[in-house]
Image 1 (cartoon, protein in one colour):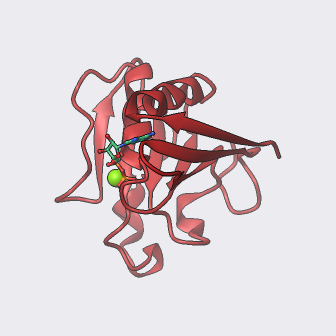
Image 2 (image 1 turned 60 degrees about the vertical axis):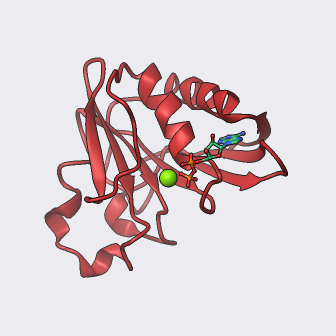
Length: 151
Ligand code: ADP
Ligand code: MG
């Protein structure tokens, strides 16, 4: 599927990109957000959540695996799996509140091949480009692939 390579210069541009991506998302979609610490994952999710109608401050989940925000007509889920070794060892119910119908979910630090998450609609990979520059690869997928729940 389509891959785009973009660059942003400053957090505001990454937020705007998040907002632009959000406008392409549908109820039930999953977005994986990859990249090392400080690459701008949470910044991108913040911009996306705003565009989806979230008024509350969007911060990194610290004491739980995720946050859920009330957006316009749906819930915006924001998960950070950094501290999890992998989902296979976790209670299968762990993700139930965050994914699926009525929600759009953004997942930071997804480990490779986590079938528990389902098929993503977008995979965004951020990397440092020096200073405030970030290189952003946006891969668009047809969700509902072999590993995901039917759309
Ligand atoms: P992550 O979630 O990937 O660890 P954060 O979004 O929490 O990263 O933090 C990114 C940090 O880098 C923020 O302090 C932000 O202000 C800064 N920053 C500088 N330039 C950019 C950029 N182009 N895009 C995103 N964040 C940037
Ligand atoms: Mg983060």
